[in-house]
Amino acid sequence: MSGFAIVVKELEKTYKSYRRGKGFLQALKSLFKRETVYSQALKGINFSIHRGEIVGFVGPNGAGKSTTIKILSGVLFPSSGSVDVIGFVPWLQRTKYVANIGAVFGQKSQLWWDIPPVDSFYLSKGIYKIPDTEFEKRLETMSTILKVKEVMHRPTRDLSLGERMKCEFIMALLHNPQVLFLDEPTIGVDALAKEEIREFLLQINKNYKTTVILTTHDMEDIEELCKRIIIIDDGTIIFDGSLNDIKEKYLTCKTVDFQFTSVKDKRKLASLLKKGIVLENKKWFKSVRFEKEQVNVPKVVDELIKCCNIIDFTVHESRLEHVIKEIYRQRQK
Amino acid sequence: MIQNLLLHWQFVKLKYASRMAYRFDFFTCMFAFFLFQLSGPLFVGVIFYAGGLFPGWSFPQLLLLQGTLALIRGFSFMSFFGLLWNTQDHMRRGTFDLLLIRPVNSLWFLVMNSFDEEDSGQFIGGVAITLVAVSLLPELQGSLLAFFAILLLGVLFFLSLALLCSAATIIFIETQRLYEFIDIIMIFASYPKTIYSGSIAILFNTLIPLFVAGNYPASALLGFSLDGVLIAAVSVIGLLTVSMFIWHKTLRYYTSAGG
Ligand SMILES: Nc1ncnc2c1ncn2[C@@H]1O[C@H](COP(=O)(O)OP(=O)(O)OP(=O)(O)O)[C@@H](O)[C@H]1O
Ligand SMILES: [Mg+2]
Image: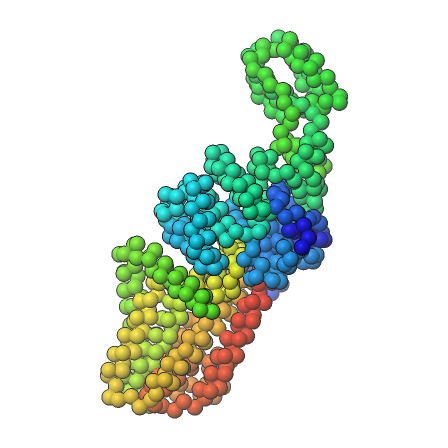
């Protein structure tokens, strides 16, 4: 067996949909003659993922992330290209294949709405034919780590979003899948619960060598969980490498945040701000990014202190979030 | 297979359990459907006494026809007709994805999910009407075995219809009109076979074999002629096979919803 859990080659997906006319007459017309609209969501992407890796899959809205996840999990048929996940072609051997994967889709619940999560777990046990002892053990461990032992006996509809998401994770992992697909799993979850979920994922990944693909718009998720990141935009992969690489390649600047109460030299301040890119521009708070190669940051800082009454001050490397934003922005040009 | 059935049973129990939590709602719903079932025979009864339009059928015999149709229909609605609404709902919200990532036959899983405990009132109503009709009849000359065998055919006929509608929904998403088509089929199935003739009679025995949903099972119990039942049986099996095939084929065209 190769060391790869997932191998994707020249994967393409074109959606076909029909444009509907406005109003009754147009609708009537479209009964006979429909205008077909094609949209190419994936334009031939290639990547491979090792067993046990956690890979962040990011990109702007409409980039094709969910489409990729749906194809990899056997839900959609691609238009062309090949995919191998743990030895299966997902859409062709779907029923057999999906016994080996788990998935959490942030916007779609796998728990039955009117019954407590624990009952859904028991159904899962039946569906995946999980042996009694293993089931009990896994449920015990997971519900303890995620702190849902009490909560999971209440009907799903009564749970808070965070509590429900934790139960979704248990649902997706009870059968010990080899590959886990996460599509925006922490959407709307508070900071503390996010942290618990991340801890939990890291533990699962470490104990069971679970391969994880994670789609999210939360760069903190990525920084905490992934060593590797794949950036997709407009159906094309534009970056595939380690987080360190991306930081080295794109973190060529420092950001200076400062808060002040008055300005002594307005013209001086304006000229200093011009040396960088102003990320945030409030009356008494500015966040400015300077290219390290072009600007002597310590000197700028020194002059800033001289021309304003500064009450708070920080200098830091750009955050991953800003890097990603910058990459998206460059692509748009 | 056994395991699947056990799982199905586990699911049905769970559905009832979660439903019973709202006891009042559950019983009123059952009762409402029960009453609804009685409206069909009432209608036919009125027509019967008003003009006796059904040559060769007495009122209790007609009632038996109504009862069997109601029974088959009730059972189908309870066990799998939720498929239609369920598919549409899944398509709109894109939750069909979640069905596809389960390691079971998706069609079966969808059917399992479509069990509708509310409609058990319909089923019970159908059984009740049938029993009343039987008690009104002097004696039954037919075969109980044939009756049950044809009942099963009736259920399979409705299953095929449900599958075809579900498949259409997967591709077109908006398919309201199809449900009305099924209502019309129910109406045609509720009259004695003898009122149809020529190509209509042939149509209802072959392409749309709706006679199996009331006429043949009632006739089997009454000892009436079962001419054509074999052709109808073959048609039902054919229809079911084709509809299952089509259903699985449509998965290729499923596009999920954005998100
Ligand atoms: N069912 C569908 N039918 C037609 N077009 C679709 C469908 N689903 C997605 N698309 C289109 O395909 C493209 C990629 O969509 P996708 O859902 O994969 O994006 P995404 O990267 O997940 O975006 P987001 O971050 O907003 O979730 C979009 O342009 C979208 O409009
Ligand atoms: Mg998405």
